[in-house]
Amino acid sequence: MLKIRDLEKTFNPGTVNAKTALSGFDLTLNDGDFVTVIGGNGAGKSTMLNAIAGVWKPDYGTIEIDGVDVTNMPEHKRAKFLGRVFQDPMKGTSPDMEIAENLSIAARRGDKRKLVWGCSRKEKEGYRDLLAQLGLGLEDRLSTKVGLLSGGQRQAVTLLMATLKKPKILLLDEHTAALDPKTAAKVLEITNKLVTENNLTTLMITHNMHDAIEYGNRLIMMHEGHVVVDVSGEEKKKLTIDQLLSLFETASGSRFTSDKVMLSK
Amino acid sequence: MAFLNALPGAIAEGLIWGLMAIGVYISYKILDIADLTVDGSICTGACVCAVLINAGVPAWGSILIAFLAGAAAGVITGLLHAALGIPSILAGILTQLMLYSVNLAILGGRSLATLTPGTSKLLHMSNNPLAILAAGLIIIAVIIILWLFFYTEVGLTLKSTGDNPDMSRAQGINVKLNKVLGLAISNGIVALSGSLLAQYKGSANINDGRGAIVIGLAAIFIGLSVSMKIKPNLVVSLVGVIGGGIVYYVIYNFVVLLGLKTDYLKMFSAIIVAVFLAAPYLKSMYFTKKKPVRAQTASARTDEGGDGNA
Image (cartoon, rainbow over all chains, first blue to last red):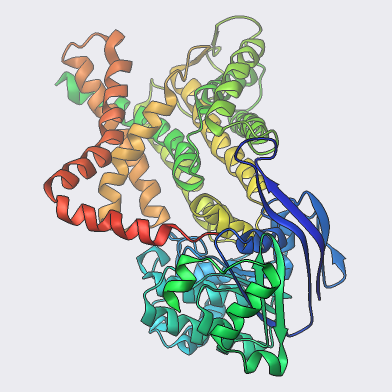
């Protein structure tokens, strides 16, 4: 499904600000894997997700999705394989366009766009049902500009957009981090529902250790640009936060440092 | 009385410049690019039209070719920006400079082309009511086509490209290609208005269009200040922009009649636009000073949410 080999990326190479964000990063995802990703500050979590999405090209290494080498494929072409939700709730939706228009754009991800009606009435009815499933009362606000929604609502709409056309891989970049705890829980619940119902292969970065353990069938921990802990199945189900921290310390030879993770512990 | 006599002319000219402002609206408001190509492409439209009409090409054919010439100019700016990575504002300036030479070449090295009397024209200042009708019909056609276009699959992606490029790329939209397409449409419409201007005035001058972007922005700001209060959708906005063009030219004529030297008119236009551009900024400054407590909590919240993008 997803095969990443020996990925490396250094930002600002050759300057005092040079930062190696990924080095020797290997990861293979199987069909239907729901992987939670945790790691300290600057461990390379977001960099890894952006590499898969094609925001920029890696310095070395290859990325293969569904048997296709996408390492040099531009971001917009790669989008046909991927559903993405960003940390910033403003980033995933077009604020000046209606909810229905945003969804209609997402429904055509990977298709050639033509000079035909972009959002038909019949299509809107389908969106109404999908929005109703979110339980946020958005089904009656199809013509509302997305910019008028709250952060949580926008994130829920983005989730729907990311999964409307079933992606090969769903990439979630701390997508609840900017939300208040109650909304974050709601969005996470919607996430879990969409992922399990559609059996989506998912990579979810989170700073919340409870969530990392509770959700998904596999957990990876990153440190200095590569995977240091990788647990799945029964072993993951029985995991506790303290075990996780000691696993990390043994594997990386250092203490786990992330203010955000520690605060949420 | 003199003002009332000048009114039909002001309206006709306002319609033509309003059409140009619709072109600017597409780049400035929809694509979120301040495209300075328009100062050159409106002149290209005028020059192409004048030369073709003098060569015996029918007026409607001339304005269509003028549209295509403007669209080509937009493509150049789009490629300089999207394919070669030049900041959009500089890409526009470069194309504008290129167009000065191109326009001189079109005019055969002269700075002025006068339309031969008796050639076919859609509109002329000698008959203002007819000019208003002709310009009005063309504008209605342009607005209907744009309205339909911006609800197609391609049109929606053009809107999202300007509104949120990150989201657009994530949804598989070729943002670079869309910018080229949008700039082509924008400058095509600008050149179309230039071709109407040449017919209306009966001539094309190499200096036509200097400061056009400023007039376009003025028309947009004046128009949107009213139309956004009515209904913030595309058609109402475009009609508002046309209205803005007319209001601009009525004021312009009024000021001229009051005796302001025409030498100062560009200064006058620039000040209007500067005021509109500065207003939102000054407003925010004013509110920050007035409610410091609220401003502080807002900034604290941003600090909290801002980190953690490891």
